[in-house]
Image (cartoon, helix red, strand yellow):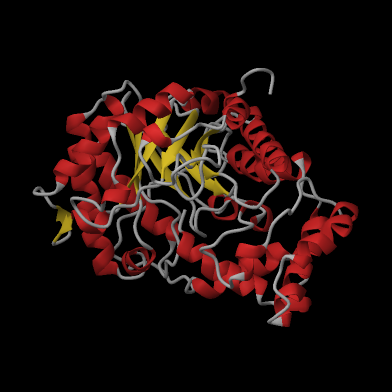
Length: 424
């Protein structure tokens, strides 16, 4: 999850004040402000090998959906974004981390790979690829599959998706990385996510992504590749994406809706009133929010005065939206309908979902996570929970963020809910 980007988006939303009518609309407006307008790709670009709508029958689609080399159902992301090699100590992953993840019951691990420290003149730096090998081996040596997620920093992402020359250089790195991974690990051990939360592109995403897929597929003919929509990976971006003509592909999205619930208490967000936001309930309705409003607003600083007014506006919109299991199902139905428009055989996957734990009532967090997870699984959508033991976590409050595995206590109630255990 690009926390810096979310901070910018939420700052715009929260400062909108009393004039805000719909949280979702203003979030989209803030994203539109951040992301430049789309431009046409160069005429010399390779033609996109995309699948036309309804190109397959439903029976063909069902066969294609079973064709992925690596099916990814219930996994977890390790949010350790290294910025140097060797990495900063806080960003290192250990064998004990993977062993704890396996003991908790997760079926695969997603690791983040920042391309900048691994690149040299637009290629994979052979002098640094040892670290990529190390983190993949940590997972696979414990008998778990791994998703290698290309996870650029925001400014790097903005550059490569808005400059044709820089994008071409990135394609060289992507192909090198795919070739390196394909040589080292079997298709049942590893999948490659081509980019997390694409955004800030001034070139058409439906031209860019097929070229990324082609580069990776040339070097990695049998492994599962994971694609995404733009608009920072949201559902709204995926449903505008044109699928490629490849059955061994998954289509990913991230889900943190609604932000006022899942990111309440976020100390990294701006303005700082977000860190004071807490006890936002789930599910929501106008009546529930009206009853909780005074207590929530009391925790927001009285100055500057626009903070309380903005929070009140967000909460009113959240209540009116009636966020509950049915609302989540309606969001996921957009993906189901998009899939059906292409024959119903696409494999959809949630690359991230989660809920920050600091100021939310634990029972409300559990219920939200349960509703999201069950909605995904009813629709055949696997997922990677965000995250292991970083800013968001599956540990109890008595934990050491980013600390060694031996100092962590898994939240057994959360694990029961995520993994469907004990009738939860």
